[in-house]
Image (cartoon, rainbow over all chains, first blue to last red; front, side, top):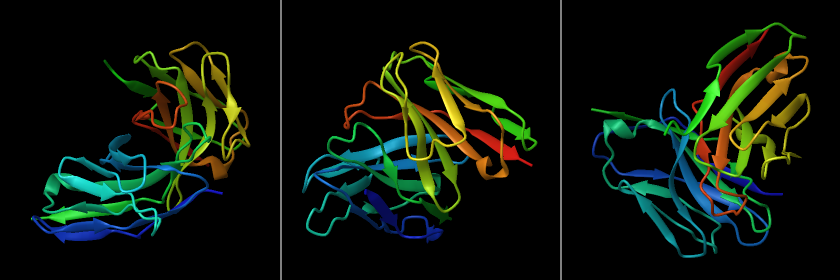
Length: 113
Length: 114
């Protein structure tokens, strides 16, 4: 079956530091890949997505590249801000699987001044 | 636009009690979903509804029932709550089941079963 593995948190960074959150996946066919973000007390919001190999999703300074050869979709940001503190979820939907998302366990990011 | 709304925000039940979690969306979406979020496990799909009048089981449906009341509303019912159902429940909606359609999430319901 499908699965998503994320690095465990919490990840604590100073403001303006570089961020990487690792995500690898197992899926049949050609999945679409997503990063969702959950701010404290809120529901999940789509951050970015990529639908085929070598696609790069980007939004709000965050980027992730769909790497089929390494089955990875790592999230990066060059300079984090305190307002980026949240929980980040990597997820996928598989070909023919409808729109059913398979989520990773989430990585909490804390950014300090 | 309120997006996806859920009620209640918090609920405490005793084992064996029943309750219904309500979800509504105002985006004219066809598809709706219920997830539960547990520590260390991410979100898992309980049930989904591809369109008005249809519902299907997700990954963890046992102990739950759902009703797609109309296009806007999708409720989740616990008939006899158990401590294992203590969780945060999220409702989501999307235009359709096409796997590139963004899912929009509600703010969640935090349920504790004693």
